Amino acid sequence: MKKFYAAFILVIVGALSPVFFQSASALTASPAKLEIAGDPGTTLTGTIELYNEKLRNQTVYTSFENFESNDDTGTPRFVGADDGLATWMNAPASISLSAQERTEVTYTISIPASAEPGGYFAALFFGNQPPQPNGSVITLGGRLGVLVLLRVNGDVPESGGILDFASSDQKKFYINPPIEFTYRFSNTGGDRVVPKGAIELRNTFGFVRDSLDANPKDGSVLPNTARKFTNMWEQRGETPQGFFATARSQWHQFHFGWYTAHLRLYWGQSGQESVADYSFFIFPWQILLLSLIVLLLVWMILKFAGRAYKRSIIREIEKQQETQKKQPIKKPAQKKKIKTDSDRKK
Image (tube, rainbow, N blue to C red; front, top):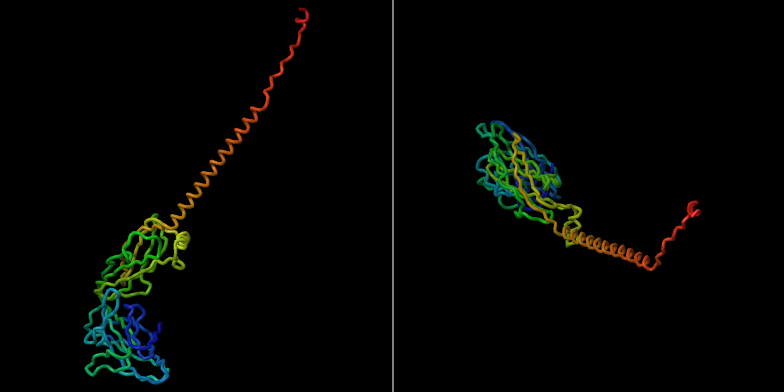
């Protein structure tokens, strides 16, 4: 369970990721996000813990607003409280907190019997100013918000998939990581989905060299919207600076040739699947250039060493030949003829 510490005004919503808060005068709310489900015609009840970090008393006021996706980054856009989930929610209009007091605030959600199955999204705000008399929510002052992600049970359609997948700069040639990948996921179903899966980096031979979590922050995609996700294929260790540092890094983390980034996502309660691929070429020219230079030096050394060895052999042969020429040629000794008895008679 996460707690978020507030200091002043501002809404920063990480696109329905686990991080959502709007600051409100040193106030903490826990949990920061409610993911709940219920049947049409039922009432849901729960509690939220508030903590007053101030050393003095303060009073906070509750309000509700629906929200929808503002763009493909997942940033929410608040659209008022005229209908939908914001009108189904209820909580004490004001809460008084003593200095550094913790208290639990009870909320209820009354789901109409006529509610269509699917996802409904709103925020429960705790602010330091009361709502306007006409019922509209405050726009100035500090507010601390808690996301409410409600699923009305029933036959909820699920459809969607990957729209596109590529490197963020859409290049086809790199010298080495880091490389950032981007994909967009479209949700055309009736409730939010949280895509799960991985991006596998495969080399020319099909071996997996690395794997990335496709949605490490558990970002949600609202119905009838598309959201962009980014993933960085990092280089282990510090980013090298300079030619030799880059070459050294390429030596320890060698990547060369055609690579394929294979994205596989699973989503929805029925476990649907969507895949996409992106190919690119890695050419680590620094380490390849140094390797070529080393090979040339080795070849030259071996070549000169071979020539020197041949010359030494030739000189040795010539020396032996000169020595043989200077030595006198010895005539072979004549064999004495042994006289036989027949020779003596003659």
